[in-house]
Length: 227
Image (cartoon, rainbow, N blue to C red):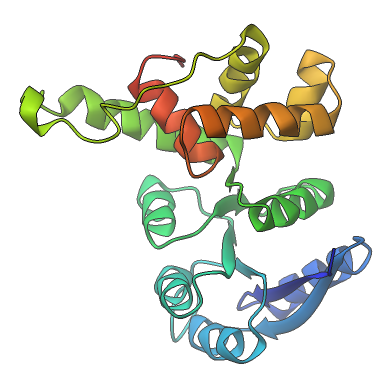
């Protein structure tokens, strides 16, 4: 597999240098550029076409959320992971709506950050556990408030025919809903990380989801998992 090309975006040089140093020692990951604000990030992304952008939120000139929106519009195959100190509800939801595949806080470990970069390239979504709980709580709140739609207006997702999950897949799904990574799920269930990845892929396929987060949302909507 080719090296994953990463663009770092943060208005603090010391943070960018720190991230660059951390990722320098991660096999299969290469930092190809650094930007100090969202406008510069969009320009560099256009030129460098990175696989992954690590994006801060609050920056001068152009913030991380509108920058994410612009990058995803121009380069839909580029993955964006928001990496920030802020976990306020509105920022989390706006970041995800802008197209970010991940939302991590800056106290994340180097190992988890590298796993998140590799994961989004595989098509997975990565949310900090504290952020994941906010997203799922909001989804439950909106689901509880939403009026029941007439049967003739049911969505494609409501009419989804789901292939039954195995008992082990249900175990993995419950831990996915808690925001755990494949490695953390493996430790909890005494499974190899690769085995967890296979179960996760099977779950995503059976739920006809786009990624891990979509699978959890679909499972919640259909009552397959509770929080």
